[in-house]
Image: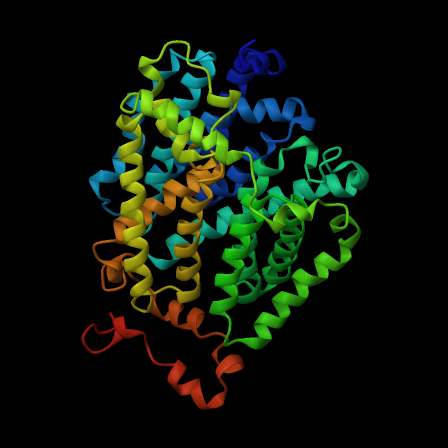
Length: 467
Protein backbone atom coordinates (compact mmCIF):
# COMPACT_ATOMS: atom_id res chain seq x y z
CA UNK A 1 0.00 0.00 0.00
CA UNK A 2 1.26 3.46 -0.91
CA UNK A 3 2.06 5.47 2.23
CA UNK A 4 -0.31 8.21 1.11
CA UNK A 5 -3.14 5.68 1.09
CA UNK A 6 -2.09 4.54 4.56
CA UNK A 7 -2.16 8.10 5.89
CA UNK A 8 -5.53 8.78 4.25
CA UNK A 9 -6.98 5.74 5.96
CA UNK A 10 -6.10 7.39 9.28
CA UNK A 11 -7.03 10.93 8.22
CA UNK A 12 -9.73 10.73 5.48
CA UNK A 13 -9.64 13.20 2.59
CA UNK A 14 -12.87 15.01 3.65
CA UNK A 15 -11.28 15.66 7.04
CA UNK A 16 -8.19 17.11 5.35
CA UNK A 17 -10.34 19.38 3.20
CA UNK A 18 -12.22 20.59 6.26
CA UNK A 19 -8.93 21.26 8.05
CA UNK A 20 -7.71 23.27 5.04
CA UNK A 21 -10.83 25.44 5.09
CA UNK A 22 -10.63 26.04 8.84
CA UNK A 23 -6.91 26.80 8.56
CA UNK A 24 -7.53 29.33 5.77
CA UNK A 25 -10.05 31.25 7.87
CA UNK A 26 -7.82 31.04 10.94
CA UNK A 27 -4.90 32.55 9.02
CA UNK A 28 -6.99 35.54 8.06
CA UNK A 29 -7.96 36.14 11.69
CA UNK A 30 -4.35 36.37 12.88
CA UNK A 31 -3.13 40.00 13.08
CA UNK A 32 -0.75 40.87 10.24
CA UNK A 33 2.16 41.85 12.48
CA UNK A 34 2.31 38.44 14.17
CA UNK A 35 1.12 36.21 11.32
CA UNK A 36 4.58 35.40 9.93
CA UNK A 37 6.30 34.87 13.33
CA UNK A 38 3.40 32.64 14.40
CA UNK A 39 3.66 30.57 11.23
CA UNK A 40 7.42 30.16 11.61
CA UNK A 41 7.14 29.21 15.28
CA UNK A 42 4.49 26.63 14.46
CA UNK A 43 6.53 25.06 11.64
CA UNK A 44 9.19 23.08 13.58
CA UNK A 45 6.55 21.96 16.07
CA UNK A 46 4.17 20.58 13.46
CA UNK A 47 6.86 18.98 11.30
CA UNK A 48 8.44 17.34 14.35
CA UNK A 49 5.09 15.73 15.17
CA UNK A 50 5.29 14.09 11.75
CA UNK A 51 8.43 12.23 12.90
CA UNK A 52 6.74 10.63 15.93
CA UNK A 53 4.95 7.39 14.93
CA UNK A 54 3.76 6.63 18.48
CA UNK A 55 1.41 9.61 18.21
CA UNK A 56 -0.63 7.78 15.56
CA UNK A 57 -3.29 10.08 14.02
CA UNK A 58 -1.33 13.20 14.99
CA UNK A 59 1.67 11.99 12.99
CA UNK A 60 -0.53 11.13 10.01
CA UNK A 61 -2.19 14.54 10.15
CA UNK A 62 1.19 16.26 10.22
CA UNK A 63 2.43 14.20 7.28
CA UNK A 64 -0.61 14.98 5.15
CA UNK A 65 -0.73 18.72 5.86
CA UNK A 66 2.91 19.69 5.30
CA UNK A 67 2.06 21.35 1.97
CA UNK A 68 -0.62 23.46 3.67
CA UNK A 69 1.85 24.50 6.35
CA UNK A 70 4.36 25.84 3.84
CA UNK A 71 1.54 27.51 1.90
CA UNK A 72 0.57 29.23 5.17
CA UNK A 73 4.14 30.49 5.62
CA UNK A 74 4.33 31.67 1.99
CA UNK A 75 1.04 33.56 2.34
CA UNK A 76 2.15 35.11 5.63
CA UNK A 77 5.37 36.31 3.98
CA UNK A 78 3.53 37.83 1.02
CA UNK A 79 1.04 39.81 3.11
CA UNK A 80 3.52 40.71 5.84
CA UNK A 81 3.17 44.48 6.42
CA UNK A 82 6.92 45.07 6.68
CA UNK A 83 8.98 46.23 3.67
CA UNK A 84 10.21 43.72 1.09
CA UNK A 85 13.56 43.65 -0.62
CA UNK A 86 14.53 42.74 -4.15
CA UNK A 87 16.32 39.41 -4.26
CA UNK A 88 18.65 37.93 -6.88
CA UNK A 89 16.70 36.20 -9.64
CA UNK A 90 18.86 33.10 -9.22
CA UNK A 91 17.01 32.29 -5.98
CA UNK A 92 13.87 31.43 -7.92
CA UNK A 93 15.74 28.33 -9.09
CA UNK A 94 14.83 26.72 -5.76
CA UNK A 95 11.10 26.54 -6.47
CA UNK A 96 11.62 26.43 -10.26
CA UNK A 97 13.01 22.89 -10.19
CA UNK A 98 9.59 21.80 -8.96
CA UNK A 99 8.12 22.35 -12.40
CA UNK A 100 10.24 19.50 -13.70
CA UNK A 101 10.85 17.21 -10.72
CA UNK A 102 7.31 15.67 -10.58
CA UNK A 103 8.14 13.83 -13.83
CA UNK A 104 10.55 11.66 -11.84
CA UNK A 105 7.74 10.52 -9.53
CA UNK A 106 6.07 8.46 -12.26
CA UNK A 107 8.99 6.07 -12.43
CA UNK A 108 8.97 5.32 -8.70
CA UNK A 109 7.19 2.67 -6.68
CA UNK A 110 5.18 5.19 -4.66
CA UNK A 111 4.02 7.57 -7.37
CA UNK A 112 1.52 9.57 -5.29
CA UNK A 113 3.92 10.01 -2.37
CA UNK A 114 6.85 11.15 -4.50
CA UNK A 115 4.66 13.45 -6.60
CA UNK A 116 3.38 15.16 -3.45
CA UNK A 117 6.87 15.39 -1.95
CA UNK A 118 8.16 17.11 -5.08
CA UNK A 119 5.32 19.61 -4.97
CA UNK A 120 5.93 20.12 -1.27
CA UNK A 121 9.58 20.91 -1.94
CA UNK A 122 8.40 23.58 -4.35
CA UNK A 123 6.12 25.13 -1.74
CA UNK A 124 8.82 24.87 0.96
CA UNK A 125 11.43 26.59 -1.18
CA UNK A 126 8.95 29.23 -2.39
CA UNK A 127 8.01 29.99 1.22
CA UNK A 128 11.67 30.26 2.25
CA UNK A 129 12.53 32.64 -0.60
CA UNK A 130 9.47 34.78 0.16
CA UNK A 131 10.44 34.97 3.84
CA UNK A 132 13.97 35.99 2.82
CA UNK A 133 12.41 38.94 0.95
CA UNK A 134 11.32 40.36 4.31
CA UNK A 135 14.95 40.75 5.48
CA UNK A 136 15.22 44.51 5.15
CA UNK A 137 16.50 45.34 8.64
CA UNK A 138 18.29 43.67 11.55
CA UNK A 139 15.01 43.26 13.39
CA UNK A 140 13.33 41.55 10.43
CA UNK A 141 16.05 38.90 10.30
CA UNK A 142 16.11 38.53 14.06
CA UNK A 143 12.36 37.95 14.40
CA UNK A 144 12.47 35.12 11.84
CA UNK A 145 15.39 33.30 13.49
CA UNK A 146 13.93 33.93 16.94
CA UNK A 147 10.56 32.47 15.90
CA UNK A 148 12.15 29.35 14.41
CA UNK A 149 14.37 28.91 17.48
CA UNK A 150 11.51 29.10 19.96
CA UNK A 151 9.38 26.85 17.78
CA UNK A 152 12.26 24.38 18.02
CA UNK A 153 12.21 24.81 21.80
CA UNK A 154 8.55 23.80 21.92
CA UNK A 155 9.27 20.82 19.68
CA UNK A 156 12.13 19.75 21.98
CA UNK A 157 9.84 19.94 24.99
CA UNK A 158 7.42 17.59 23.20
CA UNK A 159 10.30 15.13 22.77
CA UNK A 160 11.31 15.61 26.39
CA UNK A 161 7.75 14.75 27.45
CA UNK A 162 8.42 11.17 26.37
CA UNK A 163 11.17 10.95 29.01
CA UNK A 164 8.82 12.23 31.69
CA UNK A 165 6.04 9.87 30.57
CA UNK A 166 8.09 6.70 30.34
CA UNK A 167 11.84 7.07 30.97
CA UNK A 168 12.38 3.32 30.78
CA UNK A 169 11.18 2.97 27.19
CA UNK A 170 12.89 5.84 25.39
CA UNK A 171 15.80 3.78 24.05
CA UNK A 172 15.52 1.49 21.06
CA UNK A 173 15.76 -2.09 22.27
CA UNK A 174 19.36 -3.25 22.40
CA UNK A 175 20.83 -0.18 20.68
CA UNK A 176 20.87 2.43 23.44
CA UNK A 177 19.69 5.29 21.23
CA UNK A 178 17.13 7.85 22.33
CA UNK A 179 13.97 7.53 20.23
CA UNK A 180 11.18 9.64 21.76
CA UNK A 181 7.67 8.66 20.71
CA UNK A 182 9.21 6.09 18.35
CA UNK A 183 11.16 8.66 16.32
CA UNK A 184 14.44 7.59 14.72
CA UNK A 185 17.35 9.35 16.39
CA UNK A 186 18.77 10.57 13.07
CA UNK A 187 15.45 12.17 12.18
CA UNK A 188 15.34 14.43 15.22
CA UNK A 189 19.04 15.36 15.21
CA UNK A 190 18.65 18.51 13.06
CA UNK A 191 16.24 19.94 15.62
CA UNK A 192 19.00 19.91 18.25
CA UNK A 193 21.71 21.19 15.90
CA UNK A 194 19.62 24.25 15.12
CA UNK A 195 17.82 24.82 18.40
CA UNK A 196 20.46 24.25 21.08
CA UNK A 197 23.11 26.82 19.98
CA UNK A 198 20.58 29.51 19.09
CA UNK A 199 18.62 29.03 22.32
CA UNK A 200 21.92 29.12 24.20
CA UNK A 201 22.69 32.42 22.50
CA UNK A 202 19.29 33.86 23.40
CA UNK A 203 19.66 32.57 26.93
CA UNK A 204 23.01 34.28 27.39
CA UNK A 205 22.57 37.42 25.33
CA UNK A 206 18.90 37.78 24.52
CA UNK A 207 17.21 41.15 24.63
CA UNK A 208 14.07 39.86 26.39
CA UNK A 209 15.46 39.20 29.86
CA UNK A 210 12.45 37.24 31.09
CA UNK A 211 12.97 34.68 28.31
CA UNK A 212 16.64 34.08 29.05
CA UNK A 213 16.14 31.33 31.67
CA UNK A 214 13.52 29.68 29.44
CA UNK A 215 15.90 29.68 26.49
CA UNK A 216 18.90 28.37 28.42
CA UNK A 217 16.72 25.72 30.08
CA UNK A 218 15.42 24.45 26.74
CA UNK A 219 18.94 24.51 25.31
CA UNK A 220 20.19 22.40 28.21
CA UNK A 221 17.39 19.87 27.76
CA UNK A 222 18.09 19.78 24.03
CA UNK A 223 21.80 19.17 24.60
CA UNK A 224 20.96 16.26 26.90
CA UNK A 225 18.60 14.69 24.36
CA UNK A 226 21.10 15.17 21.54
CA UNK A 227 23.68 13.23 23.53
CA UNK A 228 21.15 10.49 24.30
CA UNK A 229 20.59 9.91 20.59
CA UNK A 230 24.20 8.69 20.34
CA UNK A 231 23.93 9.88 16.76
CA UNK A 232 27.16 11.10 15.23
CA UNK A 233 25.22 13.11 12.66
CA UNK A 234 23.59 15.00 15.56
CA UNK A 235 26.29 15.19 18.22
CA UNK A 236 29.30 16.14 16.09
CA UNK A 237 27.63 19.05 14.24
CA UNK A 238 26.20 20.25 17.55
CA UNK A 239 29.68 20.20 19.08
CA UNK A 240 30.90 22.35 16.18
CA UNK A 241 28.11 24.86 16.70
CA UNK A 242 28.64 25.03 20.46
CA UNK A 243 32.38 25.34 19.89
CA UNK A 244 31.78 28.37 17.65
CA UNK A 245 29.50 29.88 20.30
CA UNK A 246 32.04 29.23 23.06
CA UNK A 247 34.83 30.80 21.01
CA UNK A 248 32.74 33.91 20.42
CA UNK A 249 32.10 34.21 24.15
CA UNK A 250 35.73 33.52 25.12
CA UNK A 251 36.20 37.10 26.36
CA UNK A 252 33.03 36.91 28.43
CA UNK A 253 33.95 34.41 31.19
CA UNK A 254 30.91 35.13 33.35
CA UNK A 255 28.56 34.44 30.48
CA UNK A 256 30.42 31.26 29.53
CA UNK A 257 30.33 29.98 33.10
CA UNK A 258 26.57 30.53 33.32
CA UNK A 259 25.99 28.63 30.08
CA UNK A 260 28.34 25.81 31.04
CA UNK A 261 26.69 25.38 34.43
CA UNK A 262 23.24 25.10 32.82
CA UNK A 263 24.26 22.49 30.25
CA UNK A 264 26.48 20.46 32.59
CA UNK A 265 23.70 20.61 35.18
CA UNK A 266 21.27 19.06 32.71
CA UNK A 267 23.75 16.28 31.93
CA UNK A 268 24.29 15.59 35.63
CA UNK A 269 20.55 15.45 36.33
CA UNK A 270 20.14 13.08 33.40
CA UNK A 271 23.22 11.02 34.24
CA UNK A 272 21.18 7.86 34.78
CA UNK A 273 19.85 8.17 31.23
CA UNK A 274 23.26 9.04 29.83
CA UNK A 275 24.65 5.83 31.32
CA UNK A 276 22.13 3.82 29.29
CA UNK A 277 22.95 5.54 25.99
CA UNK A 278 25.31 3.82 23.59
CA UNK A 279 27.90 6.60 23.65
CA UNK A 280 30.57 4.21 22.43
CA UNK A 281 29.29 4.95 18.91
CA UNK A 282 30.78 8.42 19.24
CA UNK A 283 34.32 7.13 19.71
CA UNK A 284 34.90 6.34 16.04
CA UNK A 285 33.57 6.98 12.55
CA UNK A 286 33.15 3.36 11.51
CA UNK A 287 29.92 2.96 9.59
CA UNK A 288 28.25 0.80 6.98
CA UNK A 289 27.29 3.97 5.15
CA UNK A 290 30.56 4.12 3.26
CA UNK A 291 29.63 0.95 1.38
CA UNK A 292 26.20 2.42 0.66
CA UNK A 293 27.84 5.59 -0.70
CA UNK A 294 29.96 3.49 -3.07
CA UNK A 295 26.89 1.65 -4.36
CA UNK A 296 25.06 4.89 -4.97
CA UNK A 297 28.00 6.40 -6.82
CA UNK A 298 28.01 3.38 -9.13
CA UNK A 299 24.26 3.72 -9.69
CA UNK A 300 24.59 7.46 -10.42
CA UNK A 301 27.30 6.75 -13.00
CA UNK A 302 24.80 4.66 -14.98
CA UNK A 303 22.48 7.66 -15.49
CA UNK A 304 24.27 10.84 -14.39
CA UNK A 305 22.11 13.40 -16.21
CA UNK A 306 18.54 12.29 -15.52
CA UNK A 307 18.82 9.85 -12.62
CA UNK A 308 15.88 7.49 -12.26
CA UNK A 309 13.85 9.23 -14.98
CA UNK A 310 15.42 7.01 -17.66
CA UNK A 311 15.96 3.91 -15.51
CA UNK A 312 13.01 1.53 -15.43
CA UNK A 313 12.14 -0.32 -12.22
CA UNK A 314 15.24 0.97 -10.49
CA UNK A 315 15.72 -0.34 -6.98
CA UNK A 316 17.60 1.62 -4.36
CA UNK A 317 21.21 0.42 -4.08
CA UNK A 318 21.57 -1.79 -1.03
CA UNK A 319 17.80 -1.63 -0.53
CA UNK A 320 18.04 1.63 1.41
CA UNK A 321 18.27 5.36 0.85
CA UNK A 322 21.65 7.00 0.36
CA UNK A 323 22.13 8.48 3.88
CA UNK A 324 23.60 11.41 1.94
CA UNK A 325 21.48 14.27 0.65
CA UNK A 326 23.72 15.02 -2.31
CA UNK A 327 23.99 11.43 -3.53
CA UNK A 328 20.26 10.96 -3.07
CA UNK A 329 19.48 14.00 -5.24
CA UNK A 330 21.86 12.82 -7.96
CA UNK A 331 20.50 9.27 -7.84
CA UNK A 332 16.88 10.39 -7.98
CA UNK A 333 17.11 13.36 -10.36
CA UNK A 334 20.60 13.41 -11.88
CA UNK A 335 22.68 16.50 -12.55
CA UNK A 336 19.77 18.18 -14.36
CA UNK A 337 18.21 18.93 -10.99
CA UNK A 338 21.22 18.40 -8.74
CA UNK A 339 23.61 20.83 -10.41
CA UNK A 340 21.43 23.95 -9.91
CA UNK A 341 20.90 23.05 -6.26
CA UNK A 342 24.61 22.46 -5.69
CA UNK A 343 25.57 25.71 -7.44
CA UNK A 344 23.17 27.60 -5.17
CA UNK A 345 24.80 25.92 -2.17
CA UNK A 346 28.28 26.95 -3.36
CA UNK A 347 27.10 30.51 -4.01
CA UNK A 348 25.61 30.73 -0.54
CA UNK A 349 28.94 29.69 1.00
CA UNK A 350 30.64 32.50 -0.93
CA UNK A 351 28.09 34.79 0.68
CA UNK A 352 28.85 33.28 4.09
CA UNK A 353 32.54 34.11 3.75
CA UNK A 354 31.87 37.66 2.60
CA UNK A 355 29.29 38.35 5.31
CA UNK A 356 31.49 36.94 8.05
CA UNK A 357 34.52 38.97 6.95
CA UNK A 358 32.43 42.17 7.14
CA UNK A 359 30.27 41.19 10.11
CA UNK A 360 31.38 44.29 12.05
CA UNK A 361 29.84 46.49 9.36
CA UNK A 362 26.40 44.88 9.67
CA UNK A 363 24.00 46.30 12.28
CA UNK A 364 23.51 42.96 13.98
CA UNK A 365 25.32 41.36 16.90
CA UNK A 366 28.54 39.91 15.35
CA UNK A 367 28.10 36.80 17.50
CA UNK A 368 24.66 36.25 16.01
CA UNK A 369 26.04 36.71 12.50
CA UNK A 370 28.86 34.26 13.23
CA UNK A 371 26.37 31.67 14.49
CA UNK A 372 24.29 31.95 11.32
CA UNK A 373 27.41 31.65 9.15
CA UNK A 374 28.51 28.56 11.07
CA UNK A 375 25.02 27.10 10.83
CA UNK A 376 25.01 27.43 7.05
CA UNK A 377 28.27 25.50 6.83
CA UNK A 378 27.10 22.86 9.30
CA UNK A 379 23.87 22.35 7.33
CA UNK A 380 25.85 21.50 4.22
CA UNK A 381 28.22 19.29 6.22
CA UNK A 382 25.25 17.51 7.77
CA UNK A 383 23.85 16.94 4.27
CA UNK A 384 26.63 14.40 3.70
CA UNK A 385 25.12 12.14 6.38
CA UNK A 386 21.31 12.45 6.01
CA UNK A 387 18.61 13.39 3.52
CA UNK A 388 17.06 16.14 5.66
CA UNK A 389 18.76 18.97 3.75
CA UNK A 390 16.61 18.32 0.64
CA UNK A 391 13.65 16.49 2.15
CA UNK A 392 10.54 18.69 2.43
CA UNK A 393 9.16 17.20 5.62
CA UNK A 394 11.90 18.78 7.77
CA UNK A 395 12.15 22.36 9.00
CA UNK A 396 15.90 21.78 8.46
CA UNK A 397 15.31 21.90 4.67
CA UNK A 398 13.37 25.16 5.03
CA UNK A 399 16.15 26.68 7.15
CA UNK A 400 18.70 25.62 4.55
CA UNK A 401 16.89 27.44 1.72
CA UNK A 402 16.12 30.43 3.96
CA UNK A 403 19.72 30.99 5.07
CA UNK A 404 21.06 30.28 1.59
CA UNK A 405 18.69 32.92 0.20
CA UNK A 406 19.92 35.45 2.75
CA UNK A 407 23.62 34.79 2.13
CA UNK A 408 23.24 34.76 -1.65
CA UNK A 409 21.39 38.08 -1.43
CA UNK A 410 24.12 39.45 0.81
CA UNK A 411 27.06 38.13 -1.21
CA UNK A 412 27.48 41.15 -3.46
CA UNK A 413 27.29 43.77 -0.70
CA UNK A 414 27.32 42.46 2.87
CA UNK A 415 27.40 45.98 4.31
CA UNK A 416 23.94 46.71 2.94
CA UNK A 417 22.52 43.20 3.45
CA UNK A 418 20.21 44.46 6.18
CA UNK A 419 20.01 48.09 5.17
CA UNK A 420 23.10 49.02 7.17
CA UNK A 421 24.00 51.95 4.92
CA UNK A 422 20.51 52.78 3.72
CA UNK A 423 18.84 55.73 5.41
CA UNK A 424 15.59 54.73 3.71
CA UNK A 425 15.38 51.24 5.13
CA UNK A 426 17.30 51.25 8.40
CA UNK A 427 15.23 53.13 10.95
CA UNK A 428 16.70 52.37 14.36
CA UNK A 429 20.50 52.12 14.53
CA UNK A 430 20.36 52.99 18.22
CA UNK A 431 18.58 49.70 18.80
CA UNK A 432 21.60 47.85 17.49
CA UNK A 433 23.85 49.99 19.65
CA UNK A 434 21.97 48.93 22.79
CA UNK A 435 21.92 45.29 21.73
CA UNK A 436 25.55 45.05 20.76
CA UNK A 437 26.90 46.61 23.90
CA UNK A 438 24.37 45.68 26.56
CA UNK A 439 26.90 43.53 28.41
CA UNK A 440 29.97 45.56 27.53
CA UNK A 441 30.57 46.84 31.04
CA UNK A 442 30.37 43.34 32.51
CA UNK A 443 32.88 41.83 30.14
CA UNK A 444 35.32 44.62 29.31
CA UNK A 445 35.35 46.75 32.43
CA UNK A 446 34.78 50.42 33.05
CA UNK A 447 37.93 51.43 31.19
CA UNK A 448 36.44 50.23 27.90
CA UNK A 449 32.95 51.50 28.51
CA UNK A 450 33.45 54.68 26.53
CA UNK A 451 35.08 52.71 23.73
CA UNK A 452 32.02 50.44 23.60
CA UNK A 453 29.82 53.46 23.07
CA UNK A 454 31.40 54.15 19.71
CA UNK A 455 29.25 53.40 16.71
CA UNK A 456 30.29 50.62 14.32
CA UNK A 457 32.01 51.69 11.12
CA UNK A 458 28.77 52.18 9.20
CA UNK A 459 27.94 55.10 11.46
CA UNK A 460 31.25 56.88 10.98
CA UNK A 461 31.53 60.30 9.35
CA UNK A 462 31.60 58.66 5.95
CA UNK A 463 28.10 57.33 6.59
CA UNK A 464 26.42 59.76 8.99
CA UNK A 465 23.60 58.68 11.25
CA UNK A 466 20.23 59.38 9.56
CA UNK A 467 18.17 62.01 11.35
